[in-house]
Image (cartoon, rainbow, N blue to C red; front, side, top):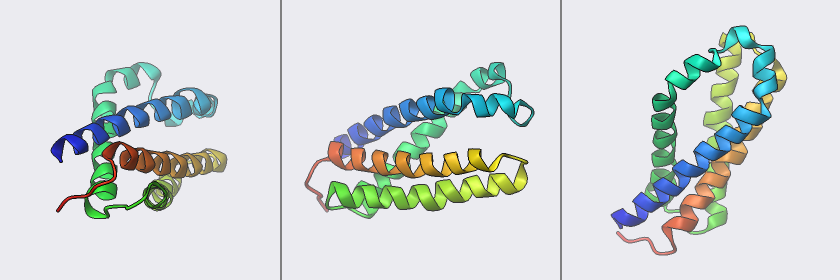
Length: 137
Protein backbone atom coordinates (compact mmCIF):
# COMPACT_ATOMS: atom_id res chain seq x y z
CA UNK A 1 0.00 0.00 0.00
CA UNK A 2 2.79 2.42 0.88
CA UNK A 3 4.40 1.77 -2.48
CA UNK A 4 1.17 2.74 -4.26
CA UNK A 5 1.11 6.03 -2.36
CA UNK A 6 4.77 6.64 -3.13
CA UNK A 7 4.38 6.03 -6.86
CA UNK A 8 1.25 8.19 -6.96
CA UNK A 9 3.01 11.04 -5.13
CA UNK A 10 6.01 10.84 -7.45
CA UNK A 11 3.81 10.84 -10.59
CA UNK A 12 1.74 13.79 -9.35
CA UNK A 13 4.90 15.63 -8.25
CA UNK A 14 6.42 15.36 -11.74
CA UNK A 15 3.10 16.37 -13.33
CA UNK A 16 2.74 19.44 -11.11
CA UNK A 17 6.32 20.53 -11.79
CA UNK A 18 5.82 20.14 -15.56
CA UNK A 19 2.40 21.84 -15.56
CA UNK A 20 3.61 24.76 -13.47
CA UNK A 21 6.67 25.16 -15.69
CA UNK A 22 4.50 25.28 -18.82
CA UNK A 23 1.86 27.60 -17.38
CA UNK A 24 4.02 29.99 -15.36
CA UNK A 25 7.40 29.60 -17.04
CA UNK A 26 6.11 29.82 -20.61
CA UNK A 27 2.41 30.68 -20.82
CA UNK A 28 2.24 33.54 -18.32
CA UNK A 29 5.81 34.79 -18.55
CA UNK A 30 4.74 37.81 -20.62
CA UNK A 31 2.24 38.87 -17.97
CA UNK A 32 4.87 38.46 -15.27
CA UNK A 33 7.37 40.51 -17.26
CA UNK A 34 4.82 43.31 -17.65
CA UNK A 35 4.34 43.36 -13.87
CA UNK A 36 8.01 42.82 -13.01
CA UNK A 37 7.93 45.15 -9.98
CA UNK A 38 5.49 42.79 -8.24
CA UNK A 39 7.55 39.62 -8.62
CA UNK A 40 11.03 38.38 -7.84
CA UNK A 41 13.77 38.71 -10.42
CA UNK A 42 14.41 35.46 -12.33
CA UNK A 43 17.82 35.16 -10.65
CA UNK A 44 16.18 35.23 -7.22
CA UNK A 45 13.71 32.58 -8.35
CA UNK A 46 16.53 30.28 -9.39
CA UNK A 47 18.07 30.59 -5.93
CA UNK A 48 14.73 29.55 -4.40
CA UNK A 49 14.33 26.47 -6.63
CA UNK A 50 14.68 24.03 -3.68
CA UNK A 51 11.75 25.74 -1.95
CA UNK A 52 9.72 25.49 -5.17
CA UNK A 53 10.45 21.77 -5.45
CA UNK A 54 9.48 21.19 -1.81
CA UNK A 55 6.26 23.15 -2.36
CA UNK A 56 5.35 21.05 -5.39
CA UNK A 57 6.07 17.91 -3.38
CA UNK A 58 3.79 19.12 -0.58
CA UNK A 59 0.99 19.69 -3.09
CA UNK A 60 1.50 16.20 -4.51
CA UNK A 61 1.36 14.61 -1.05
CA UNK A 62 -1.79 16.57 -0.24
CA UNK A 63 -3.59 15.65 -3.44
CA UNK A 64 -2.71 11.96 -3.22
CA UNK A 65 -3.50 11.84 0.48
CA UNK A 66 -6.91 13.38 -0.04
CA UNK A 67 -7.94 11.56 -3.22
CA UNK A 68 -6.49 8.12 -2.48
CA UNK A 69 -6.44 8.18 1.32
CA UNK A 70 -9.14 10.22 2.99
CA UNK A 71 -11.75 10.51 0.23
CA UNK A 72 -10.92 7.19 -1.44
CA UNK A 73 -12.25 8.39 -4.77
CA UNK A 74 -13.74 5.29 -6.39
CA UNK A 75 -13.37 6.48 -9.97
CA UNK A 76 -11.05 8.66 -11.99
CA UNK A 77 -13.98 11.00 -12.63
CA UNK A 78 -14.65 11.38 -8.91
CA UNK A 79 -10.96 12.08 -8.30
CA UNK A 80 -11.00 14.77 -11.00
CA UNK A 81 -14.08 16.33 -9.38
CA UNK A 82 -12.34 16.47 -6.02
CA UNK A 83 -9.27 17.98 -7.67
CA UNK A 84 -11.33 20.58 -9.54
CA UNK A 85 -13.03 21.51 -6.26
CA UNK A 86 -9.62 21.94 -4.62
CA UNK A 87 -8.39 24.01 -7.55
CA UNK A 88 -11.45 26.23 -7.47
CA UNK A 89 -11.63 26.76 -3.72
CA UNK A 90 -8.04 26.63 -2.53
CA UNK A 91 -6.26 27.67 -5.73
CA UNK A 92 -8.88 30.21 -6.78
CA UNK A 93 -9.33 31.46 -3.24
CA UNK A 94 -5.58 31.96 -2.85
CA UNK A 95 -5.44 33.82 -6.16
CA UNK A 96 -8.25 36.15 -5.06
CA UNK A 97 -6.56 36.80 -1.72
CA UNK A 98 -3.32 37.60 -3.52
CA UNK A 99 -5.26 40.01 -5.76
CA UNK A 100 -6.48 41.81 -2.64
CA UNK A 101 -2.92 42.11 -1.30
CA UNK A 102 -1.12 43.00 -4.54
CA UNK A 103 -2.09 45.26 -7.44
CA UNK A 104 -2.24 42.40 -9.94
CA UNK A 105 -4.11 42.57 -13.25
CA UNK A 106 -7.46 40.78 -13.14
CA UNK A 107 -6.63 38.71 -16.23
CA UNK A 108 -3.58 37.25 -14.46
CA UNK A 109 -5.62 36.32 -11.40
CA UNK A 110 -8.29 34.71 -13.59
CA UNK A 111 -5.58 32.78 -15.46
CA UNK A 112 -4.33 31.50 -12.10
CA UNK A 113 -7.86 30.41 -11.17
CA UNK A 114 -8.45 28.56 -14.43
CA UNK A 115 -5.00 26.96 -14.37
CA UNK A 116 -5.55 25.87 -10.75
CA UNK A 117 -8.78 24.07 -11.59
CA UNK A 118 -7.22 22.31 -14.57
CA UNK A 119 -4.02 21.44 -12.72
CA UNK A 120 -5.66 20.04 -9.60
CA UNK A 121 -8.32 18.10 -11.54
CA UNK A 122 -5.66 16.50 -13.75
CA UNK A 123 -3.31 15.84 -10.82
CA UNK A 124 -6.08 14.19 -8.79
CA UNK A 125 -7.12 12.04 -11.76
CA UNK A 126 -3.48 11.04 -12.29
CA UNK A 127 -3.15 10.15 -8.61
CA UNK A 128 -6.17 7.87 -8.90
CA UNK A 129 -4.88 6.26 -12.10
CA UNK A 130 -1.43 5.53 -10.69
CA UNK A 131 -2.79 4.40 -7.31
CA UNK A 132 -4.92 1.71 -8.93
CA UNK A 133 -8.37 0.32 -8.36
CA UNK A 134 -8.30 -1.34 -4.97
CA UNK A 135 -8.53 0.47 -1.67
CA UNK A 136 -7.57 -1.48 1.42
CA UNK A 137 -8.43 -0.68 5.02
